[in-house]
Image (cartoon, rainbow, N blue to C red; front, side, top):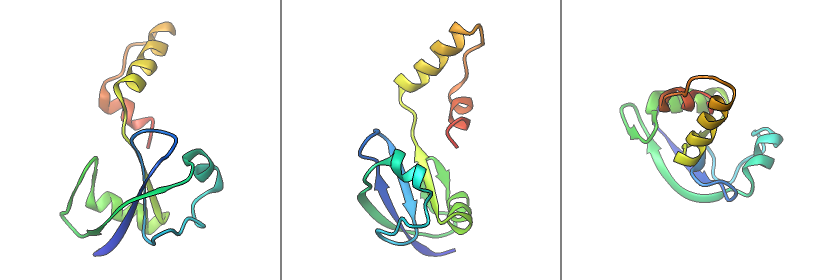
Length: 107
């Protein structure tokens, strides 16, 4: 499981991150995703190992995504996005979602 992981941030949207196994290599990522993500800006590299603490995802989940797809996209919700989704749900007569339920929409 031990490997280096390269992290890029999204230039278009705040708090969107792309984790890849090879620096500056995006050819295996679907073009639609890359178009939506925009020009990736390198943020950091870190060593992934079992039990490593990573924000918003476990080391095991990240390793699985990297093994299966070669990348992992993380979108951290902002209060405005959470509020916008629940405002639309209220307009439709639906109950508001909790934060963890909202996160499921973005995985």
